[in-house]
Image (cartoon, rainbow, N blue to C red):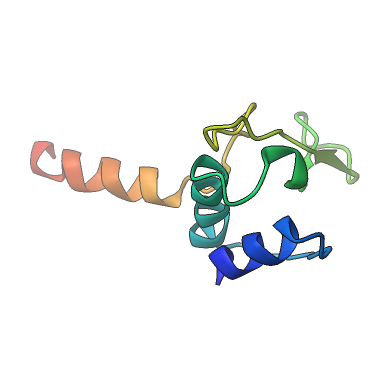
Length: 95
């Protein structure tokens, strides 16, 4: 699905995707790395609550992708569920 999205966008079609899927994001990153789409043609936006958690407003963060599909500023708690699960699995025997 993400490869098709990348192909469409690289052909000049504006595609807007709202997702919570790390699979979609990572597939787009792979498409950039494989030169299916130029990183300048990919825009990523996410919302983050203020650091002090007292402000109800959200901050819009827009990291950039480089030519290898790497995200410039990986946000805190951004698609971190796999990392949390892996840490539990690795350390479970130590409990």
